[in-house]
Length: 442
Image 1: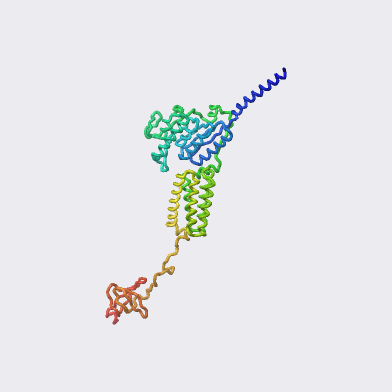
Image 2: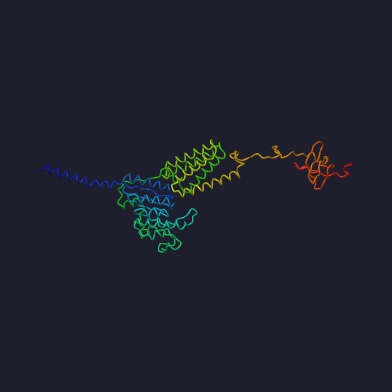
């Protein structure tokens, strides 16, 4: 009987331990904190993708996105939003300063939103590269995305639309005609666009009952920071312009090396940034190597075919690596225009000053000092006497000693066999005057 009691007690103790295991597992869940800072672009998308992947591998209990961004590019925002929607881990947006434009869109795609007392959220109209409102087509698509984001977390879509459309009038929240809606922390909580206002992540964790969780901060590495800079849509055309200009200079001035080094370095930076950001695959690198190989082959096997195929392969590799075909194509077009214009400016205004262009610019001048003359200049003939061998009407031929010379009169007709005096020599033009009888006698 005693053994049975002991066995029963041990069995109950074991069952209690089994019941406690899930509780300990939940308490030990880690919370990943991923900063969403500065501009929203493709490099940030790659960084967030890595952070979410690490959180999923660790079976994290939640991911907190600490947002402070003025916005950014629509294509990158769409990509990040899909990452937030696809993960099974609870996503929490904590706006510690600003979630404007694309930042507001990202916050709406999280499961919950919390805001710092001084934070703001909204002003999400699409702006083109010139700083103006985007075309109707792009603006309509963006408004639809904002509505979908609000609906995904069961929020009223009216406020999301007012953030993207200045024509929606919500005077109680300072969004009159011509003004986009921007919500402060209290206002966002009032309209259901925030689950609460907290002063810190620690306060947020306590509110969520996650204060005992292990905090894992995901920070950008140096390579990711560099990739974010190199993949910025403003930097990409600059890199490609420098690359094309350098390669063009090397093509016309082979053997110098410096332009080729600068051009290839810019091209490598472009591909490095897109590789780290996860936008480019090794297939684009292989295509680039093939293209450069064909361009080098053109120097040894002239004909143009290898060069044209090489240029096409390099352009194809750039478009393949860019991720977004339309954006990359525009960057390539800008780079081609900038490189061509730069080449013309360098040759026209700085060509003679820079030794770099000595191979493609004729620097020698065909002046008299250098020995370049179209005909011998004979000033010694001035004042000499000659006889017309032909009639001068007003041009003809005169005889000076044993030499026949082409000459012209001052404009008057001079007959054949007349005595003339050479009065002017202008290069190959020799001007004569008929002698009067008085002058002949003298």
